[in-house]
Length: 264
Image 1 (cartoon, rainbow, N blue to C red):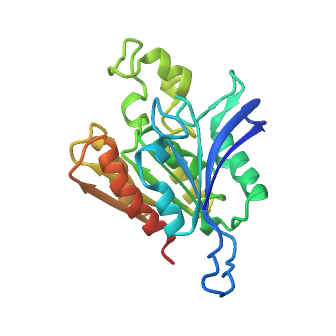
Image 2 (cartoon, rainbow, N blue to C red):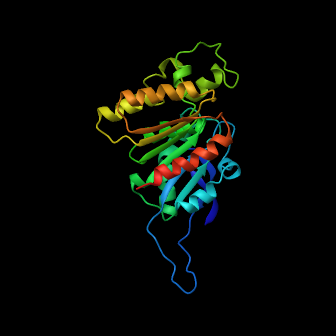
Image 3 (cartoon, helix red, strand yellow):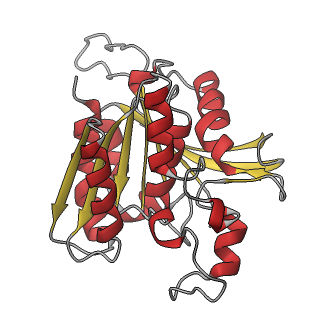
């Protein structure tokens, strides 16, 4: 197992950025037996939540153990507080970075599979939304999406007034991140619109694993997305269980989600 911190110049962000990578090694030889080499690794691009950073998953979960146990490379970038969306005015295309450039760069740098079915994207809260949006936006890259306690904010903020504030974000911040909120519904920031677009063009939709705690303040938007997926007959797994918007819940669910993703 190798834990690597990589600094590289990201064209989509126009600056040098860092990400952390967990890379399981080949099975070591024991008692004189030769090491067992295996093929390219499956990969998971794992996104943090609002106000977090690339070290969160390493700090608060057993992701290192899970990476080794399930032989899956895990890449953990920082998305700052941009919801993993593109900001063309700022010249910071976080969606393109997560959904395209980082995938291409890591495939060149590490011994990982280039097969869509071996490539997953996941996250929690803001990162859950980022995984859904970019997993669907760049559906040719990802076979599966893991979304925990996802902040699917388009359900709440589309068309809100200028005095909107929810205690965490306000109208000014939301328009900075999501653009014109009156144009949000039906845009490429709207997961429902992305699903419909994939269906209309007969492109593959990634399988989805969605989990949310019954005491989570984002339960309503996760239920709404679940209902939409069911109505559209999209392949998904949806789980609700006791829990709030906490690492205790995410530690449990990320292990279940990785097992779901890596099952053949």
